[in-house]
Length: 201
Image 1 (tube, rainbow, N blue to C red):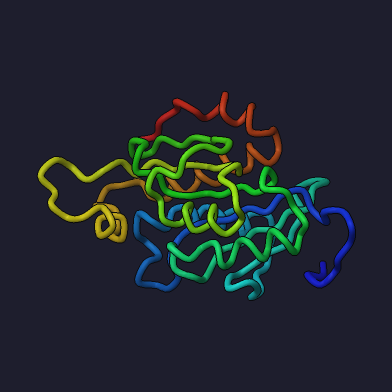
Image 2: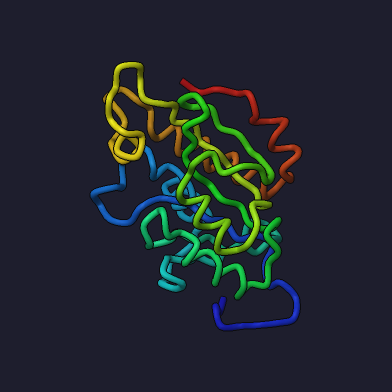
């Protein structure tokens, strides 16, 4: 499927973005859950990656639907530089953008779908919203919780650390991917009813 084909109408149903930071140093950190969930979707749907828009993009099919997955290769606080040109290329409205990201304001393992809303101090979401001119896009929020009482590290440093031993990170990634697929296949309202309020240890 060519990335160079253009038409008057959107060429696919959704653009799915996994937020994170590039490089091996950050792969296993709390801030990279969204990126890893989207990579898992690509693996399971047989997608292959190519470089474009300061990121890696994979066009693939999920049943009858064509999707594009995007993993920005910018740092988190510049995610919009990757997402905005991809959204323009595919001629998709913001409500067809699904962003998968870590969420401080949810308990560890709480995975939820959401449409629009605030940015909750998330630098990746802020960059993205500034670049596309709206906050009205779909989100899949993977809860990481907040530092424990007495932890003096700034939150910005804490999210860039790996999870402590014993955390089932694979389950967090799995649930994030499954919630995103529910948004795509069933719609955000069904995904919210299915996922919002469920927790995973």
